[in-house]
Amino acid sequence: MLSTDELPLAQRWELLLPHQERLYRLARVRLAAHQDAEDCVQEALLRAAGHRGLDAERVGPFLTSITLRLCADVYRRRERARRYLYQRSFAPETASGPEETACAAAEGAWMLQQVQRLEGREREVILARIEGTSTREAASRLGISTKAAEGAFTRARARLRRWHGASLTVG
View 1 (cartoon, rainbow, N blue to C red):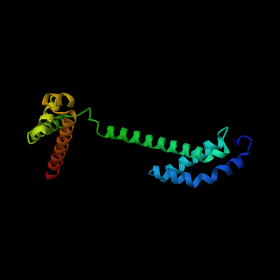
View 2: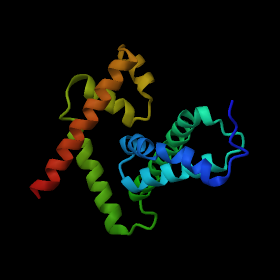
View 3: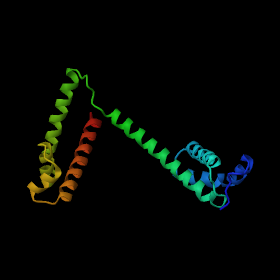
View 4: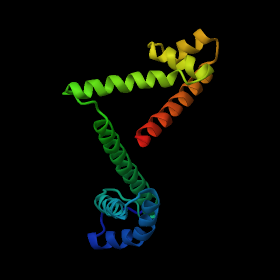
């Protein structure tokens, strides 16, 4: 094992910099923004340059490992922020006035009417879920598998969503 602890910093960088392009390509495939890819590569190089006990023979795999982990961290951060913003954008308003309450009640009544348009299992599963039963309980009560109930529930929700969207565009 060739330890780089004794090497001057300039020689350490000479050992690391030839990997920069390869690391950038590796990061670019995994991240949408090229700035994020560049940041990951720079951070990986900095961490490797300051790492005690850096093995000169294993610099490539070491840099690859650091870069991949940094890419995963960026992805996780972005995904967490996206989920947070998504939840915040669809959170119900707490201070709704009488107009919002009336509109929500009318929309709920309309949606219940649309449920009656559903057929067979889709209607039965949706009605069971409206009553507050779980999909598993609804499946048991209807004598079908849980997967069949989940599929019927998903199809029913998609159909209701389409009908709702169409009603908004008709105006």
